[in-house]
Length: 348
Ligand code: NAD
Ligand code: TYD
Image 1 (tube, helix red, strand yellow):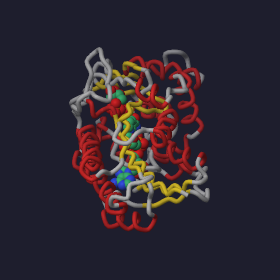
Image 2 (cartoon, helix red, strand yellow; image 1 turned 45 degrees about the vertical axis):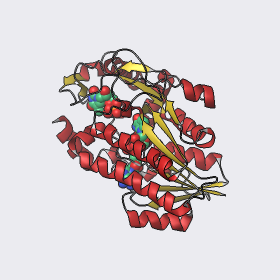
Image 3 (cartoon, rainbow, N blue to C red; image 1 turned 30 degrees about the horizontal axis):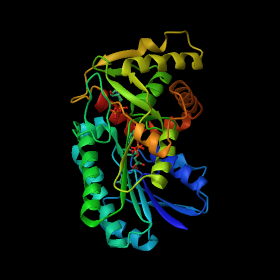
Image 4 (cartoon, helix red, strand yellow; image 1 turned 60 degrees about the horizontal axis):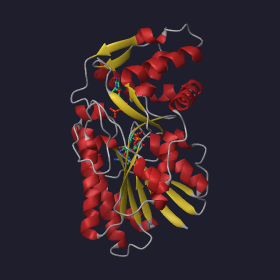
């Protein structure tokens, strides 16, 4: 029996990772540690919450005393660390919250792991889940490789870059066995409607404007969340210590083209006349420091671990929309209360 700590498991990507590990590995005990911030939602895990190999721990990774206590109590053999503040726009408004959770929180976990196992590293692993945004912005050509220099532009990406550096530093200095992956933009079921795709689905459902930043010619590489969870499983089990693996969808879209595709699919599914949702597109003030383009070279994880995306963008987007359409209660619950204040402040 292995004891695995997954942090941030009530969030978007974390819930898919927890589900996969709990169902696929009955011999592992999965401890899901989450502070249940606005982005954490235990409804995401109702289907597995009563499994015997699953325990939820309600706590904050920046609470050093609490973290040390649970490491001593549960003797985690490995950590899959996803807990983070994750939205770029929020990092522009409140950068210190990002430094606290993403940098200090990661350090507290690293330290607890080091203190627990000292030099006894056999069979132990700290897996840090990171983002391609640490590499900064590409021009119109080129791809992020594992060797691309770090050049973060937002407080979010700077905090993730810093946490990546601390993970490496614990490896170099203390011999802590680690692996890191840097993934492109995810989309799929249960993503909080502050990120582009679920925000726009929710706005189309409510006949609200679709706020496209700047000229809409920014490019992202989109990956279906379930394919990211499958990649995390592979990296966790087969990735080599001290290595980084880039994960991406081989799937670049300009924001405006993606939004138009989303509008077309929504019109069809809602039985609305073609062109109805596109009329909601509204160009708004740009995001400060907006990165022009992200695109991942995922050939290393493809060649070394045999991973590639299994779901096409059209299929994944269609499934994602279907999920939101049949889970309007979920959407209504997470968009009541504080979400309204966030929305007003962000979009004035
Ligand atoms: P999310 O915002 O949906 O979920 C984050 C989770 O972390 C939430 O459940 C939240 O409650 C929890 N959390 C936040 N602060 C915490 C704290 N102090 N202590 C304990 N728990 C806390 O994020 P996500 O989109 O699922 O991203 C998960 C990870 O993957 C992050 O590390 C992010 O940087 C990385 N990532 C995300 C993407 C993406 O497109 N969303 C892409 C690449 C990498
Ligand atoms: P987002 O989903 O916030 O992810 P990230 O900033 O981490 O890439 O945004 C994806 C792209 O969509 C990004 O270029 C910003 C843009 N965007 C808008 O144009 N309008 C919006 O309301 C949001 C949230 C994002």
